[in-house]
Length: 103
Image (tube, rainbow, N blue to C red):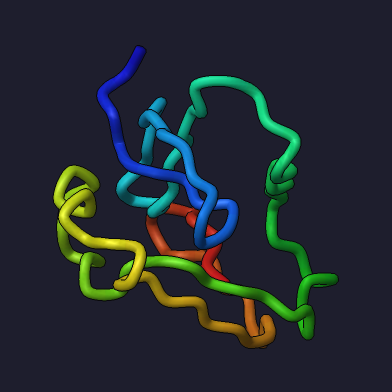
């Protein structure tokens, strides 16, 4: 099993350990593995951004103070440091040179 990463919270009194499977620091995304399957949450479906996303309501969850740190350093942050921000997709850009799609 991978190195212990932290806890996944289902509500304030229900959590379990999660392990880092893989991450991409450039895309700011990680895949975590639970010790066993659960029906407490459903997986997030990811898709490529397209023009039909414009105007859609979106949520961002993360640790804004850790944006310049490595994934390993995020372990020092607690669940109380996480933020949730909502908004709408107003524009899609393609980064010059990398082709990376930005929302």
